[in-house]
Length: 147
Image (cartoon, rainbow, N blue to C red; front, top):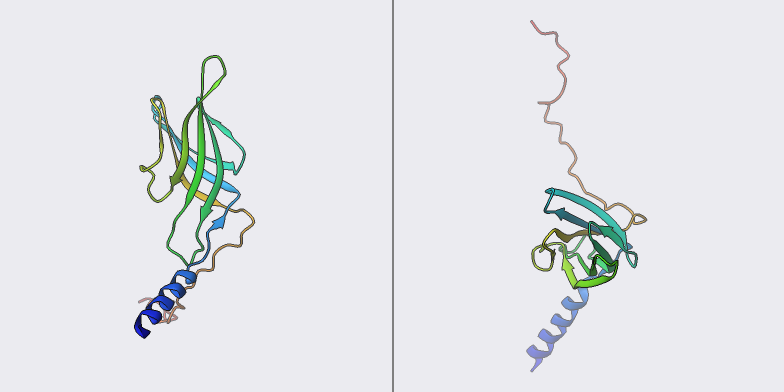
């Protein structure tokens, strides 16, 4: 019984150790126009909408994980197709996953749209740790003139 309690406590602690998701104000998408073969990268503020070809793309949320966690970027997106009479027809409503773009991308006869990331322009840049150069001497300039 004591072992079960310890395992349960350990599982609870490791589950709590994972950081919460980070909400970002901007979703980043790629769109492909299959007629011209041109791929376009575009950003949309969460809650706003943007026209891509004959589609209207609207991200409702865009989540990432902290840089210390394994990447997982998700966005809940609504996509409407503009009809010839200027009305809209909903063709997609659901989650998109940047790490698996083929899983829930919008596949339209003319346009494809998929999530590539989320960003926060006000977030501080991630700290990248580097190893200092040990100065082995192989890259040092030679003070002696060449013969």
